Amino acid sequence: MKSKERHHLKQNEFAETTRRAVDTVKDNQKQIVLGAVAALIVVGGLSGFLMFRKSRANEAGARLGTAMAIAQSVISPASTLPGATQPPGTYPSESARSEAALKAFQEVIAAYPGSPAAISAKYEAAGELLDLGRPSEAEKLFEEVAASNSDLYSAVARMGVAQSKVATGQYDDAVKLLTDLSANRDGALPIDGVLIQLAQAYAKAGKTKDARAAYQRVVDEFSDSSYAFEARQQLAALN
View 1 (cartoon, rainbow, N blue to C red):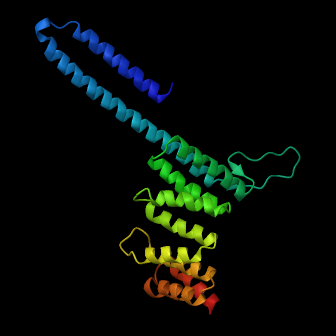
View 2 (view 1 turned 90 degrees about the horizontal axis):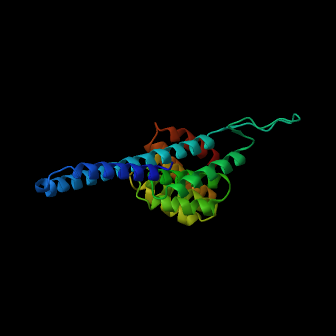
């Protein structure tokens, strides 16, 4: 039975119990008791609604978890032995896994629109689209997540938009977006990570001098970060 139907049944049972109790009261107490019963019905209805909403959130979280598990599944190329089948929970290639994960994330988005789980699923689906070489579709989803005002995903989704733009050759737009993000030191994003993305965008655009400057900022300003090693490697390659 669906959660909504169970919720409706519980409301009917509560209403029936209340009606039978009201029938037993004396006439001179009827108005007072009916007022109290009405209040109980409101409280009961609110409680039921909150339970239903929590149930939906739990369902959405479980579906999202399943999709995430697919995205992290083991890659196991199909055996060439006669009659061999794909091991359960594995995929023969990264593209096959991405396609399966994308489908699962899209199902979460469709089933729980506007929910935190759907926002997470959109972000993850956009990443899968990038991996599948579909950056224009990825950019659209990243933009939707960026506009959602999610504390967790909005800022990082803007980086996803920039990555999508780089993949479609929109280098100037990507550089502008990443430059703006790198200037926000009070934001949620690690500035050294943004600078790495900015340097890569410059390099893709053929602007070696600007790429070198961005990598150098990582080395100079964030020498102890995990990105500094990568920046030094890239600087050596560009020199």
